[in-house]
Image 1 (tube, rainbow, N blue to C red):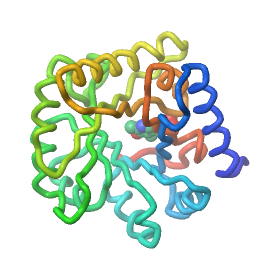
Image 2 (image 1 turned 120 degrees about the vertical axis):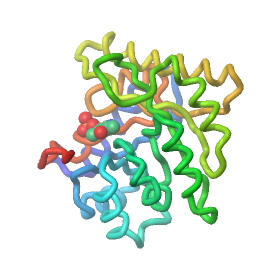
Image 3 (image 1 turned 180 degrees about the horizontal axis):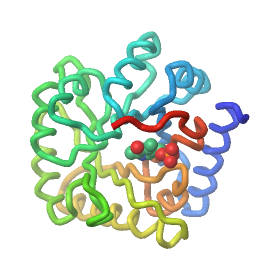
Length: 234
Ligand SMILES: *Cc1c(COP(=O)(O)O)cnc(C)c1O
């Protein structure tokens, strides 16, 4: 079985190659290691090899890992990439650095109220539904501008950009289409005066397509940690 070290090098190599093909600086893409269902030891091993950004889907599981790895807290960045219910916003506002899955103003307002003032602003992406009927989460593209302007005006949050989880597709053109849509939506918001710099898109199977369309954060789980050993809860 490949070690985390080998897998990190392999994934970084894929990102570097995709950047080279797109004429992009490799520094413009951040690798977010998706550690859902992995134990704290797996995160520690990746962190020891220089990985700083970790993505989690389930709030309680993440809080347990953040606590277990408290001595590393200052050099890690924890990103929530799973659905966020309003009864969990306080825990998230207190413990995470980033939230990628804001798709309602009410959730953003709660995060803004609950973000402790002594912490840096919570970094926020709006999750956009780029797959139409096929997906239940994410704001519809038509409703995105109003939500983005409202979230950008909230205190203690910094709206950074957009996130999407497209329907899986196999051929490269089909993989690129939803990523291109997300990039277009970001460009439109920037043209409206919002200072946004982040496109969170691309996973183990389609990170090349996402980088080709401008991803600045790719969220990679399986290619780094192997197949997840247990089914995702909830
Ligand atoms: C699990 C997950 C990923 C990582 O998926 P892999 O296919 O394992 O790379 C990325 N983003 C989100 C939102 C996820 O839930």
